[in-house]
Image 1 (cartoon, helix red, strand yellow):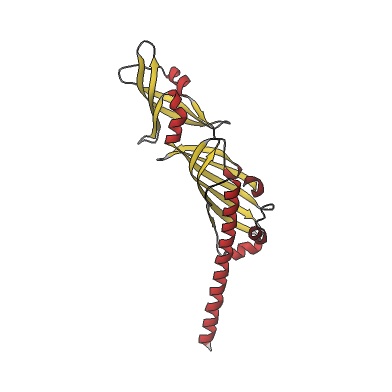
Image 2 (tube, helix red, strand yellow):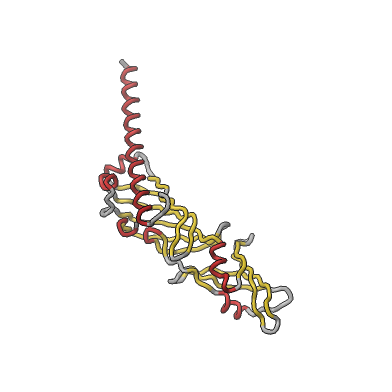
Length: 233
């Protein structure tokens, strides 16, 4: 008799686990579909609900977190890589998720990040004479280019630049300049090479709040509060 009860218990637990996984996969697929459609992505993003069990959260209509990995994304003509968003405190009745209805879906908070590759940064500065952009070993952003000096002509220069957030995007501002055998005025270089990359926000309405150089490019991060998904998607 005890063996029978144990077998029944195992079967019940297996059934509950299977139902939990099935419901979660359906919800993840629906969120991925909505994001792909609204952002016109060529492929659906990876979506993962945090917390376990899923059905407990589904019954309450409140989910701890949802991670959305979009990957590549273009905004205002700027190609971004490694675009990721974490939705915290997602309010979503399971029936709405299953039926594809995003009208009542909201998240308490959205935390987003993306990388502007150094190749894209260089293209933004190419018409100013910049030929390469990279992160140095000490964590600074370096740019190589040419400076048109009076009489002398084109001079190869190395720039150390700072990153600043503005209402228009991420500003790249020269802070140091070096040229072999020449003294190049920093003020002139600032006037020539200062440039703003036009990116003011991230998916789900996240406003950019930080930028830092990483190995592959400029990593921007942002947040948004009380996010209605029917507008953010």
